[in-house]
Length: 144
Image 1 (cartoon, rainbow, N blue to C red):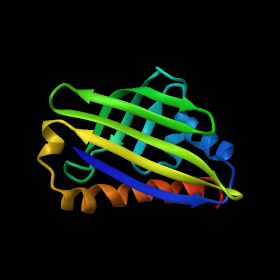
Image 2 (tube, rainbow, N blue to C red):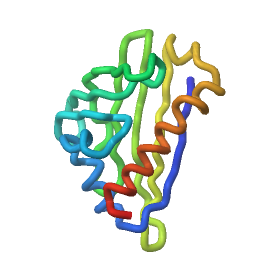
Image 3 (tube, rainbow, N blue to C red):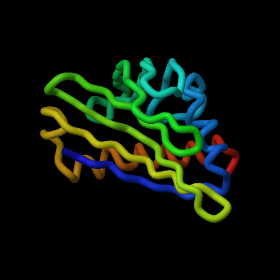
């Protein structure tokens, strides 16, 4: 199992951050990792997603329907995807009010046969920078 954990502090309210994260249909306009999403940000929703394949060749994408496992306005947005035995992931954003801003805790837990073949070094090299790029793009989207 691998855990990816990134954080950023944004100078805006959790509700404003939520509005951008929950607007799944507009991910193609700003999100460099989850480059397309179709669905509603409600618990249990099935969302069709296209994301960059960080484990494959440059330019490859993965198309998968994920399930929203958390969708609490101003608090958390998370989804889970699964390919039996091969891959299981839970990707999420936790929003924590901090002073006048919001700490965004951006994580993913990966398990299954495919992630088991990846080293911690590979996760640090290929995955963490992509998650940090999402955090930076989120800040830009919010005009920060």
